[in-house]
Length: 625
Image (cartoon, rainbow, N blue to C red; front, top):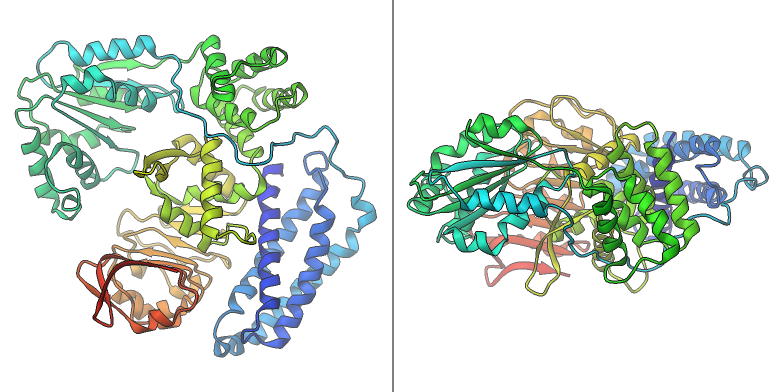
């Protein structure tokens, strides 16, 4: 059982202890019989957690199974805790069921307390030479490009030179090699900007949608209002794109294209007026460009040299300062172990940047890195997982939660923060708002090169973020091992604590069987594909593009634990959802805020896409507070 698995488990236990403490201090209508049992469970869990506080789980793997067992019990307790905030009529209806569960939970806790006592666990202590991270906010590492000079010059010549007809070029190579980084460097090169009349960038990815690609390109190359474009019919989008490019010399980047189908879906909308226009693919596969056009100019991206790896590593870690002499040899060894992969270098640099600049600490990283990649397989993934190991405990669940989002999309920071809060992933601190803490968590992850900035606001703050495909793959891998998250894209439903359903077709999903399934997060899911009674712990409901009438019929009123809801219109049964904190309405016309919303004491953020009115008088778009 890998150590990384139990670290998030301990966070889950800590989160539950906070919830239990809040519940015991809550004067709401919770049945006294249940509250008394919670107090006993709280004390027993707190005792077991205190025993594990100083255990080095890597050196003492015999205790890892204990942590996993405590986590599973925490999930069972959470089920009852969440339900305890339901209306009293619901509690009375389920009381015998809850009491039976509590009885089994207490028996399991007492058995563990007898088996593991303080005297036994005191043998396992952290060694004094453990790796210690610097306190405070890690530095945000600036974008630094090392290498690619020859490749960039060669491709610029290809873009600017003959022939005059529309030509496709491709940059291909393995994940993490820097294909997108090089493409961005080319896209922003002054000679390219000056040469072409129109430039546009779209992200394709594995599960592309033609409509989204048309919108992304059209927003850049047309004179149409950016607000109008997303509301246009697909055929009108295609027509507008063709007209915008007709007679122009244009440069279009199609980033992360997996197969030729995406190009075949769009190629008719790119006129060839023999103006020297260019299409640039970035892809993992050499054949994609050649399948799109036999005359495609294919550029294979090489690995960085050892010297380039070391140059990139020290510039990322020390920025404008010099590397201390005692760390040079160790640093070069770490750079060499990244095997020429820029992503691995950047991620390892983030680990080192958050360590004290001590030779002993860097030596420990060398040891960990060498043991991880000694078999020669999955080298990059192992390096990335080492960076996850060095994350502070409170950041790990937030990092894993990125697996909920589809690959290659821009994630609005406001939405990400709302979801983290709704899921209870932000630890409460006195005199600090949850939103401010969540913002700090995000900046920490960005500073560690695990999350990328996609867009900034006019004041410089981050507006949207995204994640490299390899890092997202790692999120999903670890989240699956941890029983934290499972993304469903077909008919299979697994028992996981967090369930994310991504629906791309009308294929139905079988009934979610997991007792602890919490969020249902994705759009365009056929509502008949699931049974509401299976999702009683639902906290997140994101169906902003779906007709809500059917959900009213199947009983959205039973989702009494919802914290976050994004819908196309406000369901008639909203009055029963008293735990809602974030409500986002994608209304197409002016809407009136139901009076019942104004009585929801936990509602902290209310947003309407179009104008709305309160009692038919005041126009609003967003309400916070």
